[in-house]
Image (cartoon, rainbow, N blue to C red):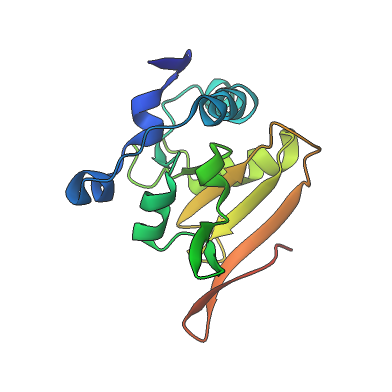
Length: 164
């Protein structure tokens, strides 16, 4: 199923973990609508600007898949509740490492930060000159926070600090 001109549903739901563990990763109609808005407002502008294929390393994640990969979540009344925007169809991770385009993750991060309306933009690990990948989210409902963060490991745990 084609979501936008340059992005299809298979790219947004692909997961080796889901395949290996037999986990369903099919978005609900509401989550599919969120994915379309994310693609229109975030993915397609990036694709048009760089004029090259953009690699989505993670898109939609079902609750079970998010739990299996250790995605953001919490325990409420003894039950796992995902907190990742990936589970709502509102986030994608982009990784241009290994592409032959010459476009780096930093290029993508800087373009999003300077030109797009987003909810959250995260420089995911990596070095001071290039993140390992870029996380970006776009909310369908409500206003975008324009929150820019950097993911770092502190005491063996992932911590998000303001990006400066």
